[in-house]
Amino acid sequence: MTIANFREIKISGGSSDKKWDADCDKSVSSDFDARDKMEEFKACKEINTWGPQPNVYPVVDTKIIPAKCDLTIWQQKRVLALIDKFTKKGWNYCHHHTPSWLPPDSQRVAIDPSNISGDGGSDGVCSAAGLSGDKKSGWNGIDCTHFTSWVYNYGFGAHLASLTGDQACGPNAPGSVVDLKFDSNNNYTNDEIAKLQPGDLLYIAKKSGVNPMAVSHGILWTGIKVQASGPFSEEVLLKNVPPSQIKAVQNDIANLKKNGKDLYIIADSHNAGPNYRIFAGWWRVAFTHARRLIGTKAGDSPSNHSFTNNVCGVTKK
Image (tube, rainbow, N blue to C red; front, side, top):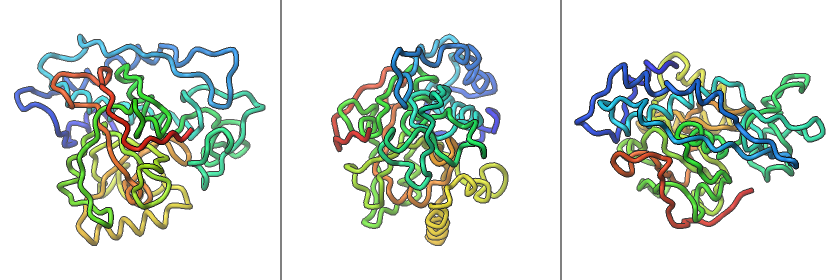
């Protein structure tokens, strides 16, 4: 997907008195080359299976944003551009703080994809689903909420709590909780789910039941609907679902279609690494809540996000 295609995606939350054109689109990724040259991490003397903490990336230089461009839309489209950039990297799902760090040979242990949301280092380093056949490559990568944190760190200089429970619910959880109403069966109307905006952080429990105390996974909302053909078609996106979850996802998709629900696309690090997936199956049924860092205050930046009070108080790792 190219930046130009993002102009066709319905982006909500922007100001109607601002314009958007090709110059605005171009500016969204204009500093990526410079950021790519920055140090991803600084190696420590002692490194465990998680590797070093990420480098502190600078906040966005506002000079790269044309004054005519709506800032909220610019930030939302920047998240989409970053998702597209990072899903093409070929990173695996790894219990690492940063995506490009390679663990020593002695610490290269494969995680069983069926237990991918397990307790971090005790389960291994990287998902077996993302390793090469001879296990010589695929040892760099990042896990779920380190990926969501990485998008906001690299893109905005916003430093989110990266442990799953802390980011989702802890006293330093970023942004504000999005007010969404679900029925007793955890179903939503199209109008309710349309309240979500690109860049929102969504959190998933280990199992269905929508219990915030059991949050184990974090994803990014794209606002993109599943398309009839191409890279965002149902056929292509289903290839990104691990075998252990494919049946549940297919059944949920059928149920959503039967009830006239829209099918949306999310992005997360799971299974074999960061990729686009359909918001269905476990991702949807066990969805607990969403947080927003973009557009909460006019003219603000995610790097200036405020923290909200603890809403479920669980630390996963």
